[in-house]
Length: 175
Image (cartoon, rainbow, N blue to C red; front, side, top):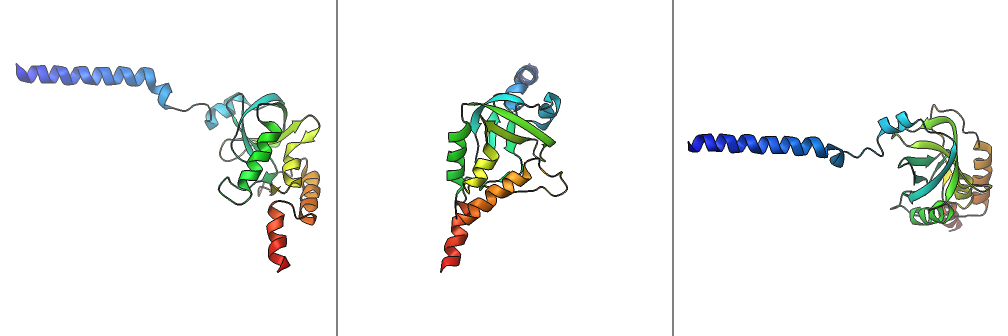
């Protein structure tokens, strides 16, 4: 009799765990940033609100998708100039409706949407480079970014003026 009670109790626990697992699976699986969902949503040009700035070159759109600025690379948050790049990016786009413009390359290897962000007539990708908070970054094997010439001019200007990341190189060469 005691053995039957234990078996029934064990079976009841398994049923409860199964039911809870079935109804709460979405709670444990983060869908909003999955590559599958981004591919299904087919990223499009348009106006979107930026709800979060992750760093100097990545934001989260109101759709929940991560968006990475195409053609540039900013220092990570824990690197020199990383916090400044993130702050500048926040000042430019956080909680604003921005224009998203895509290029021929739509997603990176991490499933983030790639493209350009405009605030009014300011290309944010270019502004980050011009201030020295990012540098031009080309992805091997990818098509040439639409605004590559603009980005390279901005980078040359930042280098000549020793802004941001280029200041450190100027300082080290000054000795």
